[in-house]
Amino acid sequence: MGQITSRYIEKDFIPVPQLSHGKHKLCNLPLCEVWMTDDTTFCWLVLIPRKKGLREFHDLPQRQQMEVMKEITLATKALEKSATEITGKVPTKMNVGALGNICSELHVHIIARYEGDAAWPGPVWGQVALVPYANSEKLKEVMATMTKALLA
Amino acid sequence: MGQITSRYIEKDFIPVPQLSHGKHKLCNLPLCEVWMTDDTTFCWLVLIPRKKGLREFHDLPQRQQMEVMKEITLATKALEKSATEITGKVPTKMNVGALGNICSELHVHIIARYEGDAAWPGPVWGQVALVPYANSEKLKEVMATMTKALLA
Image 1 (cartoon, each protein chain N blue to C red):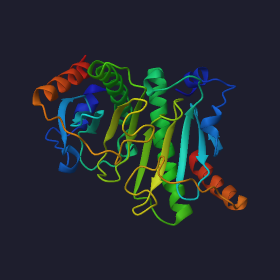
Image 2: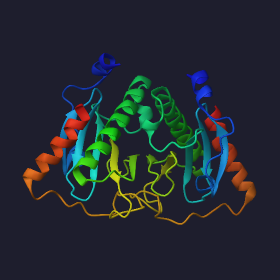
Image 3: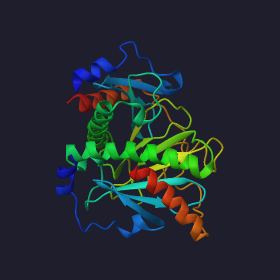
């Protein structure tokens, strides 16, 4: 699947600015770029398939639909692990969502949720203003923890 | 994949009441039951894998993770088509989400969204009170339209 996916993706892919805004790139998986939302409230990843013009999962060919699910489960497990390290608590529930109402380019949010968190039990999108990391050392540390879990 | 999935699912599966409440069952796909939220505001499906105790996509074995993605894309296309028939307008965007903050049993929401709808551009969950179909003939018609598209 790796080789087929590498022929499918665009080597010069850059996400639309609306999507990368307020986020930091962590790494590439075979199909998707993995970005982290710069937010101290939530541990929050975004997967972006490296192909322009996608809107829905069914815009991907079936092999890439399967690959995106592999990468969703890989990233969900990695975020569950790294959020536990970062916060000292195991997340109550992982949230996975592909909405695209504001930016329609296909992207998948993966968010570690804790009972009683700032948006609990509602969804996070549009509910709580992002609070970026003011401390760049702490930001680097969080990014490193997540990247290590993603590439393990 | 169908045969492997049929060995995996529980033949006597019943969703937890919290999950089936306010919804109507439309049909079975190989892995998931498909339910429709009884709501006149949104065209809204919920996929529920027929296995107790699942919480996250990665609780499924890999073959069933792939199957759930197949069923997500099948149901998304079917809902896009049937929402167009029901409302007379092509949805602006399809929303797919597996949250589980309120009911943690694995389930996947698929919702047809329209620019300017009651929750636009935010997510629907927890934002707008459900308005069930008062007219049972209309409800039956909507259920039939969706079921036909799902089983096409």
